[in-house]
Amino acid sequence: MDRARPLIGITLDAEDPGGYSIYPWYALRTNYAGAIAASGGLPVALPHHAELALLYLDRIDALVVTGGAFDVDPALYGEAERHAMVVLKSGRTAAEQALLLGALARDMPVLGICGGQQLMAVALGGTLIQHIPDSLPAALDHEQKHPRHEPGHEVTLAPGTLLHRIVGTGTMQVNTSHHQAVRRPGPGTMINAVAEDGVIEGIEAPGYRFCLGVQWHPEFLIDPGDARIFAALIEAAR
Image 1 (cartoon, rainbow, N blue to C red):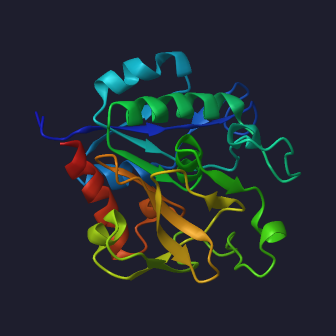
Image 2 (image 1 turned 135 degrees about the vertical axis):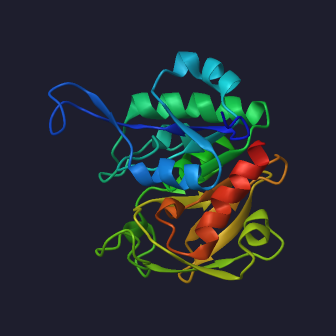
């Protein structure tokens, strides 16, 4: 038995009855687990039980907070008004927040992907742009119309950051599927990647062993740097 593979927890999405089942159901694209397994990790899915978060964290070696077609509640970063385009999944957010805060408290390696990066920013004291087209009318189209396994735009990586050291290049080609973005990273958090329109595409918190967020979906492995991100997470989890 291969006991050298660290156990990597991956947060699930959740859907109401309809489509796959007449009952509520969880969902996760297979390439999340595939990218982790290919990088030497042992992926395991984490259901939405905020009250069990610490027990899950006792058993895993690293946490991946995934993306999804929903948003972080603006109330969590101090905004009373909610944009009409904001969609909430309160049960999922509560579970992911409990897992993320618990992981950070024990300095467990954490990777936030797309909406997972946004929740990471909020957990670290940052704020979000609720709807990019309204706040930044001249921004790129960050919800690409072509398939997500193809690049949408380029991002520039900040020299000296963890992300830059992992990837080893100054730019990456990434996909893009988000209508929100980090507005201000929290205290002790730094920006590690931006799009050409200035939208924040990555954050990290140097005070932790491995606390990295990216706005794109590296599990599609579009750019060579994507696989390096997962490899670095697995190495940090050993």
